Image (cartoon, rainbow, N blue to C red; front, top):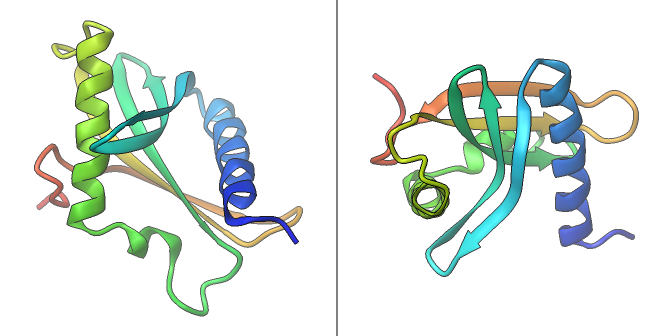
Length: 125
């Protein structure tokens, strides 16, 4: 039986391939600081996107994207800010996306929430 870490790594690999098919260019992965982590750093045209990948084998206990609360969003923002600072990208247009994957095997359901939250960890109005 795969570990939680293995499942997360698999979900991130599937997410990366799915995003690439939609024109995103993945430029970095798993940037972590002591204050947080961001799964995928991508370019979507001229926009720098920090993508949090969430997955579940089914939706019995809720959708994967529902696991991101303000606290988790702020941890992504902290890691993203650190990454942008280190790569001289603080002046770039930045967006925080969530990619939800429900299901396993050959036919999971992907749902992208572009601009899922802002730099204050809040969903858009």
